[in-house]
Image (tube, rainbow, N blue to C red; front, side, top):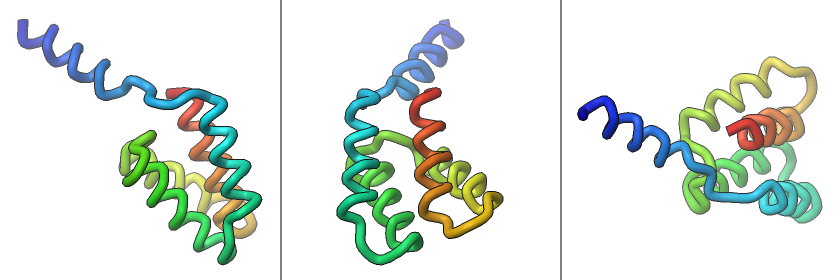
Length: 90
């Protein structure tokens, strides 16, 4: 019985709380209206996606940022790409 309740909790916590359209709309708005350069955009994404909307966990966000830092260029664009990819596969 403990295994069943653990699986139910895991599946409930991994449930997606957003649609693909909401994610696309957020990223388009961030790219259009975001101000302050790549470092500021990364901070906005953390504030919006992890703290306010709780679309992704802090661990997933940090993993996405680690992947973004491996890519060439400023961190804002690759961070959006890696975090969006992680959100759509969840």
